[in-house]
Image (cartoon, rainbow, N blue to C red; front, side, top):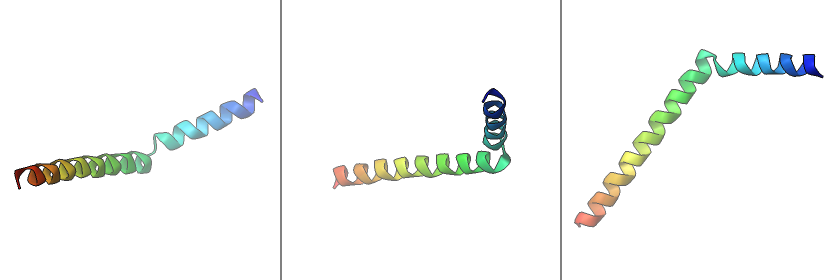
Length: 49
């Protein structure tokens, strides 16, 4: 089991550090930030009305 576990961990680490995953991570972060900004601006406009 130890050899099998170590092989699985190696594969997971290599996938986690792949450029595709990093790019996807960056995109999701940007989407979350824009969503927060939009929500805050929407609340601000609602309060000003």
